[in-house]
Amino acid sequence: MTLQTEPRHDLSPNEVDAIEDRLYRHNSHATGRHDGQGLGFVIRDELGQMIGIAAGYTWAGTSELKQMWVDEAYRGRGLARALLNAFIAEARSRGVRRIWVASYDFQAPGMYEKAGFKRMAEFEGWPEGHTNVVLCKTL
Image (tube, rainbow, N blue to C red; front, side, top):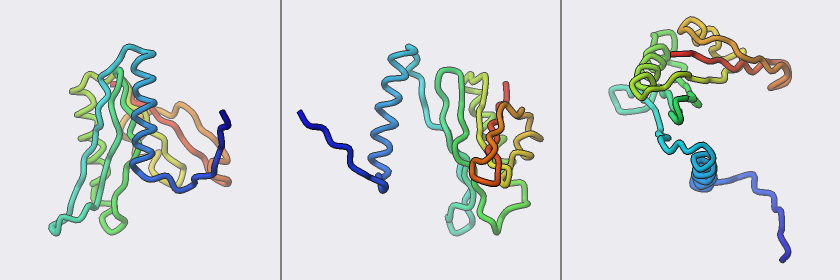
């Protein structure tokens, strides 16, 4: 049997989801925890356009906030904090003990710290000239 490695720099969302599903099955089998669920909130404007989102998941008593975004025209109005508060409240209702998030130094680590997240790690040079900050909030 000859196997090939081919470059694929344009995986579709469906292909990425299939990989995520396989990883989840493996991790669930290894831990015996099968309670993974998506967790997300969206804010829309009066036309129904998405202007903010908080998206992640809960699994095995832990949560990860993977994406947080507010459209630039709507920033400074407390929308990110509202999304974060909703995310935290839902995670808490699911029995989550810790919420993890990564934020570049030019994004919002300060907002997470004001919400009770603690810096757990900092990776300088990721991207070059900046720092990737990993934060955790214990509920």
